[in-house]
Image (cartoon, rainbow, N blue to C red; front, side, top):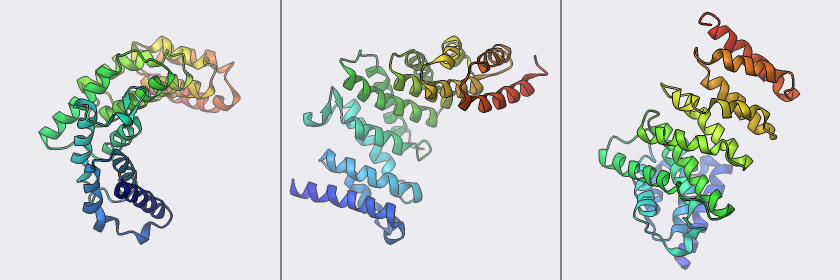
Length: 277
């Protein structure tokens, strides 16, 4: 326990030092010694070390490439194999804060060339999506489960926009944008915008077009702004007339803070699809 405590404190101290004075830490030279700590049996150490690696890897991607396989292995142990101490379970979700960090760390890198690693990661993402079908028991369970799910969807989009997992995620996102919780609606719209920007076919997103249009009248301005961004991203020759018409209608009652952005987006969409329409 004392050794684990020292490791955690050392990792967090290095992280703080690196953020303030990055030049004093030989990040590349220390990469191998730091990465190996991701295998520590104490998940608290793994969490602190992962936070450190996320900072170091951003500036030294090649040096920290070795963390990729270890990250996938750790996720598989937690999510697929269910191998974790019970004291790290937070409202039925195993150490969600570590899961989120690991999923985010993988987004620093392209998909692995190793088929075994790719297959293992696919199993991780599929399991996360399957687990999200369970009805949350309370707010804390809902928040923990959603935080992991949204990060998993972002990773799936990063790896391959056209994958079957992303298609499944699009259906889930349709559920989230109708949530009673403002934060969930916001994240659903934001993630859907991320998806719309990279997929070849917008049809899975267009299925939710009426709901997305309604988000322009949401009580929360941040949700309205995300709805506007998504409508702009999902607009094409087939739905341009409907979307632009709705944006013009909403412009009369839109918040002053949104009007300038709306006018610009309407002008761009009108010019882009004028010939076709």
